[in-house]
Length: 293
Image 1 (cartoon, rainbow, N blue to C red):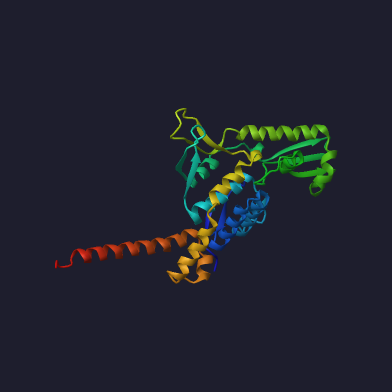
Image 2: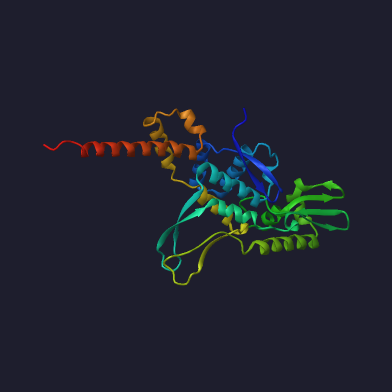
């Protein structure tokens, strides 16, 4: 029997993909990595997660970072919670305030970008012998090194009709200056197109300037991986508290706990809380009806 799946449309791939549920145990492993705070390992874990939860998409590691972001935010909304509570520090007064973000609003914003085809796929060439296919980066985390940035937009290199993409590290320094110039122009075009797009923005209640606090969609400033860390981060101790509560108070088998989604486990906990409230109300009502002595 096939596991329950849900869907999301990807503008880069121009198709709908099927997504499996994020189970509690896998989410706990993700939070462990986020707590360790190594961006390279976290980005790799997200890629592994996408591979596992979208088994019908064998090339998902090559999807654009925007498509990956859409999938991961959809997973966050469906399997954990549709809203995210943020604690933000006012840049003017340094006072903290809370605000809620609806995850789907970010997904909708990414869907509405309406990016042109040449930002997803562009080819530069030289003398009909060298062809370099460029496209939006697929990585969620870019290191600020020239080769790393240029390499993330190179999708394919054909030299005399031979695919030499796997040897990019060796041939990069041998690429003609005109090709390198075209690649950097594409990166500038890509950056300029997305520079005014914000994943999230809000205004501090303590500021009189009404200046917005923004999280930009800027892959080259690590804002994407940082935003994902915020969306999925949780106190690691809370996982063990939940496990203890569900096993010892609700007598739920651990096998069911680790294979359920965090959202499903919250339903069990809320059922228990509602039951306790009803018991307290009944007890209070019983005490109020006691005869006076």
